[in-house]
Image (cartoon, rainbow, N blue to C red; front, side, top):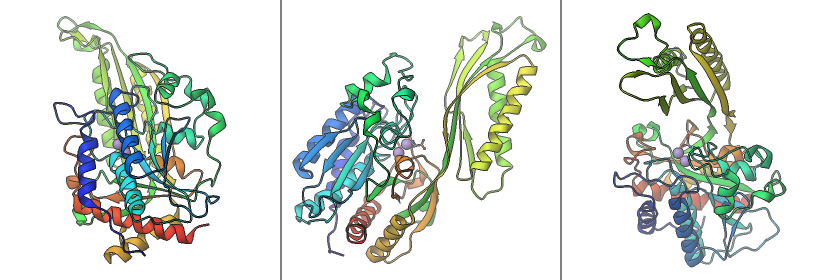
Length: 421
Ligand code: HGY
Ligand code: MN
Ligand code: MN
């Protein structure tokens, strides 16, 4: 392959500069869907792309940003798309999503400054709302363009605090909610979708390897629950007359952990209660209600189904003890296999660039690639996360590992540009 190399100093500079947008006093990044920081980061990306990388920028109906690489010889071919998401979790890190956008940018910039003409159109993309957010739907931009959700489904969503409709938020970001349904990507309308992303786990860190190829993406089940007990006096109510909703949620959490730890180690299953709202949330009142989420994941969907059945039984037992529940399923996303040809190209490029066979692994994090994989060839390259930390300000990847990923991504694009029609 052409002996082109990415510019690690420039990548490092861009990570730090983009990472300043939405940075809090506590040192975490806050770029939630449709927040001012989300808007500011989009502005930064568009300005950088126009100045250094692309000939044209478009915003699609889901407010995803698309940049077109200028040097292409066979315009009629389906494009190669590279990128990730620009939003973040609350108090998140500078790498989750952003690194994929910035490596796609860097690879395109390296090609562009060498005026490399590709056969396929090359598109860099920054996807909307990958993370869970107050509008309560994640991987939003990739769901919209891959047709996983349409107007009918999305018009039900609004911000849990401001009550702004998701439709208005999408339009405010430059999308076009009214025309979502007519702008779904057709199956195989792209030659390849490549997402570079931090692993967010410990496997590469423990093996001291810079990159890995993602073979599949975990299935995710998510539900919102409200447990209803009885608010009552914290002092005068004796134990046998209490219907303590927070105690009930705590019991569910402990029972869930016990149940999950009984599964065998292959195809791990994990479960999390990530947030809880205790009502009335007062020091001397027994909580009468608790609202919380449950997030269950595994590459083996059968294990997720078994866990859902187990949860049904737990809620049944609570009901018999006078704790009622209201449950709303908000995500039922089965595992997604990524494309073997794209994975093979990523492996071959890693071997060519760095003379070693990268691991192939299941991602226990959800990604936009899972949605794109439903309509075309999608592949992912993982970059080592130091200490496996992510979704926190300690999230960090070393620039040498990032440079490896950038060069592998560059090599893979050149390889696929030759291989694919
Ligand atoms: O939750 C996830 O797995 C991803 O980081 N959005
Ligand atoms: Mn994330
Ligand atoms: Mn991510």
